[in-house]
Image: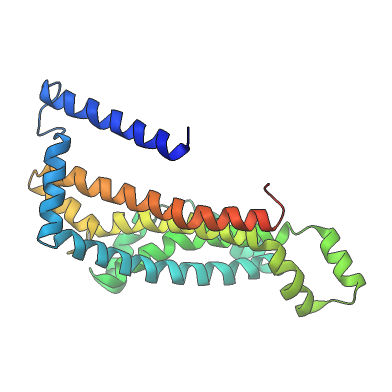
Length: 251
């Protein structure tokens, strides 16, 4: 049986049990609304364009923040891999900061950029930057020494060796870093939008929660999960798989 079919069956069974639990009142509607209530809330949200504007706003922030995170992460990761001094100083700071959740930066971001787009995008950038830095650094440091020796034997040195041998050999780590950066940035975006003034999926989630609209809360959570899974499965996993096959790391 194909994985897609297995997943469809699994989610169909899950929804059936969810609906049966609601019909037999195993839990109260205000705690866990039925699938039909969630469906109605989602349809109403898309019909009045609220969720469409939320998705557009969230993706705009994500794309800006993720692009900057990948750019900074790649640059700093290369610096750490090529400079022992930078690795021993700045690298230690990166290791310390990567364990700090992005949402913790939000109060500081609000002081610097105000309660708006700037602070949310800043949190998204931080969400993706550190993991990208560490993957790029690891990728460059783990290049097989045989590749470098072979290239040097053929006369490649310096910048030429770095661009033609080290960077291509590190590409699988670059791709993995971008995939992780996307996941961390997506989570950071939702956390940041919870405290924003909207629009955005996180803002609508908090708004619905404040007014006790649990069916919309669950609907937005489903959208967040579906978007995360679809982007990861359809884009990043495919790119990562193709790169690993091309580099002979996966059959």
